[in-house]
Length: 259
View (cartoon, rainbow, N blue to C red):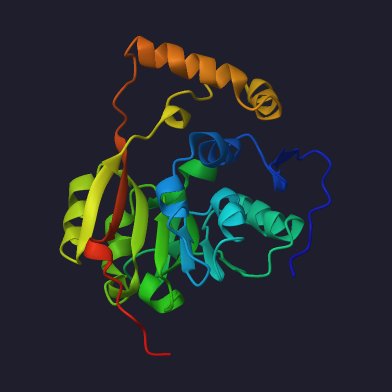
């Protein structure tokens, strides 16, 4: 469905039978998903008939892993360079149940501006023009959400209120918006909890070079595990400004849809 890139200068990363085309920035999104397992609370609740929204898909690390578990995925990524790699990773892994969208999630349909690049790309008053749309408009059949959109969480949720009644589980990386996001979800019958961001957020590019991290994948993260154990024993974990929020419908409630 999507054409593979022909660029030998861009490295591939293999993990558990999956293949990822990566760049320096996007490596961290793969690292978080594969070693950090940040999104496992959601991943473990996904069902065969689920429709997943991956908002802030980056190059598609979570999309690729989740595609085998669900019926359909909307993979939304506004950054052009990351979206190009996302399309390639869909093709490289022969995924036919992923709908990629090169837009930004917000509370309105229109035009905004994107600044930064890769995992740090975010909406801002100035920058590159990017189309915005609401969750309610682009994917009316979702049942689960993974979201990492660098500070636009509130706007995204405000544009999804019609669909939240059908969603059973959500995981969101919040950026100084944890309390507001928790309040919105609690008012929509979700139980909310804060999760440990884990080593992938603080064993980072200041600790390892990319070459060392590529080697970590080949050795099943042997050095990372040792460093993680050391840091935990010394209680040196910092308090990041971002927080990971996981929410699920209370008492297993899940509204049915009329199809």
